[in-house]
Image (tube, rainbow, N blue to C red; front, side, top):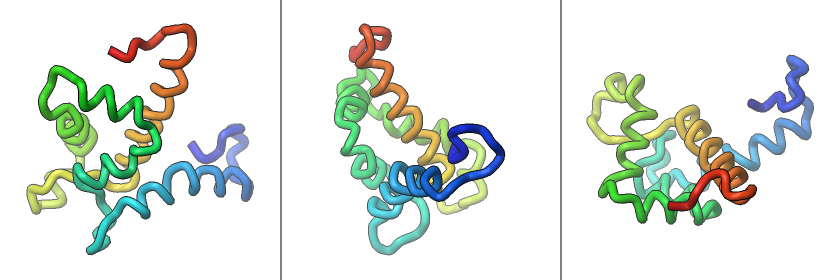
Amino acid sequence: MVDFQRRGKVNQKEWNDFYIAFVTHFENSDSEPRDGVLDEAEIKKSLEDIPDFMDIISSSNRADYLKEIMETLTARTQVTRGDGKLSLNLNEYVFLRRAAIAWKQCSGQNGFIAKS
């Protein structure tokens, strides 16, 4: 994902772009105590810059749509955390953020993805 040109290596610009687009949002949203994972409230905070995506999640017919998404993404790792608290690590968060950014880019193009 960082190697946008798929050359098998990452230059400084690619790393900086990735860091700004994903890691800084993750780090800035991880409230005290910083535990390296984001809970549901922290996920909402981290996606504030993609308001259309959060609006769709909030207006869904499903009451806990964001929670469902988080459960799907954490299914592989939740058992190992053992605390029973639903959260996303950086890898899972990057997957969610990529999907939100892709949705935002596609939904604005010729109505291919509806906002309802």
